Length: 420
Image (cartoon, rainbow, N blue to C red; front, side, top):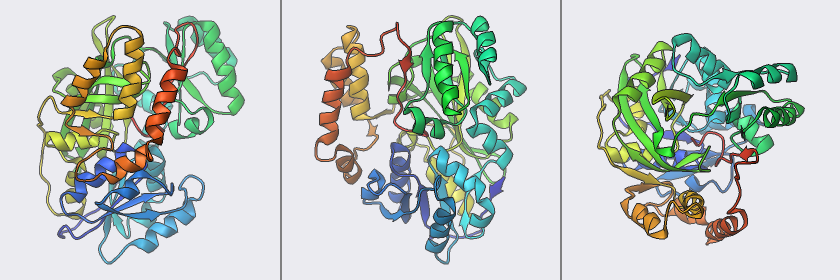
């Protein structure tokens, strides 16, 4: 475990590691609005977070490709205070863990131990740990060759979902979150493609149920090992609709989900910010664990609007400014990713489930957004790119409106690895 802090004021700067997605934009606003000096860090030159009024940009080399150079750039940028590091993607979490000894001399952060963190980022190790502590999981298999694929094929309940051990590496190869398969034949065909790339992947029976059965239990465990923050939210819609990232989320309370999520986090002696994803299987009415994300999640600004500012709570904890527990929040606070939600709506519209009036009413209910904010328009304007993104959405809808037919393997595209 790496957790360091001493008694100082809020003079330390906050480095948000990864600002090309809503994960980073939310953290920037959660801290910048509190008067904290924020440094937005990314290797992508046009990352949307660079355009926030609440942050100063810092471009570094790609931590996955040139980690030593990225480390040197970070170390040379610090000032007399030990500044704070907040990772928002799997790639930056792994980078932070790899160089924790060098970084903690000049920075403060709170992340799990290397053993726990490596196990959480590696989906196989995460599920094996979940099995060890008794967390509820759907039937899960880890085939390493085609003979083991054939064995799993006979034991799975279909549909099933093939997902990678390491999401950020998989995304570079396939540009998706995984593959849905509806039969043993599709399973074998997809695994042939996977093995040809040299990647590893597991397969699980799909947890059956609508998007609204999918929820997150988000928590922060601090320097003292105690839980100082808690928040829950559920999906209203996601894109892609079957296996995607939440596009409209609503805060809520659910005692059963809370117990499962917190039991898992505490059983593994978790530290830092994490979110456990769960879903109710409508066939059984039971909760099933999907995964743990060991970082800030895409909709973290929603928690801030609901009364739980995770970024600030961690900042205050590691700097020694003071720990304060916030374990209750306002229900019904809605977060929306405008363009991804429009794509999701189109899927429902084609099936006669939603109408345009439903989408407009949903927009009107949104309390906060992935990129849009009246006091900080830069990230939104960068995201829409002078209307290019809106045009892309329209083209996608017209071109791909009939995709994801149930007779073919589903290509579950995600915004990027680490945007859950």
